[in-house]
Image (cartoon, rainbow, N blue to C red):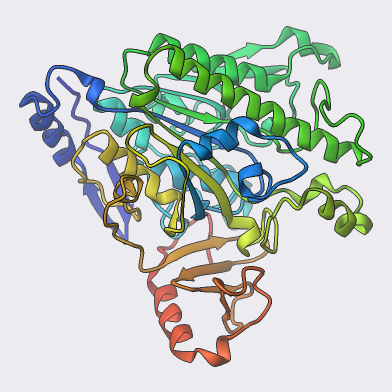
Length: 467
């Protein structure tokens, strides 16, 4: 029998309880809706790169970086052209992914928040009452594992993975700790694990390999399913440390760019290993795989500011868009997204359905065959995946605080930006102007008025991220 634990979360000052979710699970599973075998529920793997640009994969137009395995993933699945990250930096985008709440409602809205009259910088953890996709799937009988970068709770807080629904965890709790690829320690469940080969400044264990090994082992041990694996790689985030810059060693590129490209290609090879294992174990057709990035590419791999344009021309990581990580323009928030599920998702398809990370939780809930009783900002995209009629968002919303309080809204063919409070909205016809260069606010006053009305209701106050 599944444990019924009242989950609570706060929105507009009211407290909502999901006891009904637990009761519904008892009904669904107790009455045998899925039958005696749990194999009918698909395994779910969500792979997320760190600072991978929209244009960094061959299937999204990249010509310099080799990504054959991820390109094959796209050939065998569905490639989305209008999928958006939860935020333009790592911690909030991960919170959005886990909780199904966009940054106007999410607990974590920035890499760090402010506390007290002196505005002390703090890392804000998830609370016990925050409901994650892992908690929902775990209570429904899924084995749950996560590896890589977490970013939603420091040691001993309520936000660590094991207290947010994950059975198994290996990786970095603090996103700043995750900047290096030869750390002296990482976390395994709630225990700090020393990496002896990296002590004293040595570089004998490249941490990315541990994350791939964890993933392969987790799949092997839970092959009978169902399982949920969240693989949050820390590449190609800087620092750009890697054992070898092959196959780009002979390229006449800056060292950081060679290392960046090598990281992407090495990650691609490990994605290939995961897909090969699924086929070897005979669970390929009962496993749905998502591949994406947490936000736009990081400009800082172009260390020479005076050469940014020259370096950008090498890889063109933002693809056809303007901006980078920390920008609310498309280059900062639009991300690659590939979803593969043999015999269920039509292979080699491209889809322009507009969706975002807060849609993943309701999508996973529907994939697992569960009733949708938790209120989120998301809409399941299962109908789109299966080629059926799909409900759409009225609008998508983001807010960001590292450069003052900034907001963005995607509404149909339009994208609105307010990069400084008190200033008029900038409006771009994004389907015709993907680089957001021509402000058309004066031409579409009715659209501006509509988006202004959304901005009045899109967020609830946060003590850590005030306007």
